[in-house]
Image (cartoon, rainbow, N blue to C red; front, top):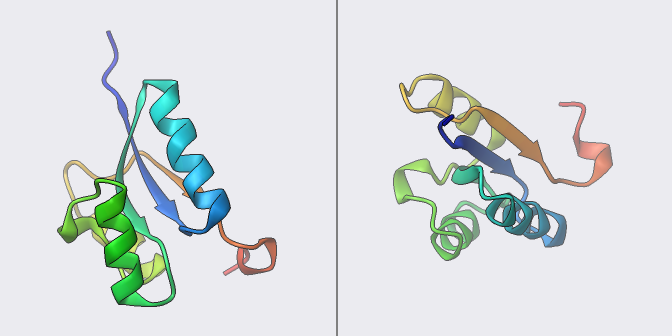
Length: 89
């Protein structure tokens, strides 16, 4: 059997929560990291609500990419759930 995929989430609004729920329902994906808000305190609070460890609740998407890239158990995939006009960066 294959191991479960580790997912990081960028964006914790409505669509972000839908992606988090869908990952859980899939049964093959664990949500392990997130940059969920442009407000670091809100991002940390949302991460706690979603069961993400405090060390993996990032303040920015670039911190998430750098942090997860440096981990041996870093995320396998990233779901970008921010408004479409913010995807390019």
